Image (cartoon, rainbow, N blue to C red; front, side, top):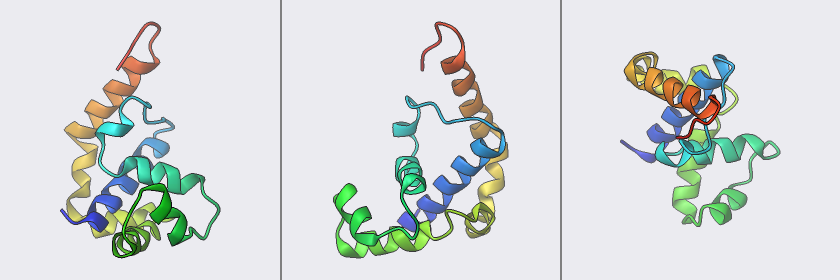
Length: 112
């Protein structure tokens, strides 16, 4: 999977969680490719500066440019989903597994 497809996937994951009114547990974020990048980009003033992306994640200019192009869909999760025709799989087992992990993290004494 290309880096831009992974960013689109991460935007879709974050959008699914936000649409469900949930937050991805901090312990799960490092396990999901590119989700940290998407969460970081959402906190940045828009428009996102490619130099900030390059510096934050120690990227080459070419890689930062590819990620930046994919992150343009950040405020339009439907566009990110369109770039991933198989993204409907997120409604399936992986999304349920992530929801279960979130519930465990939110439960008293729960940990992920």
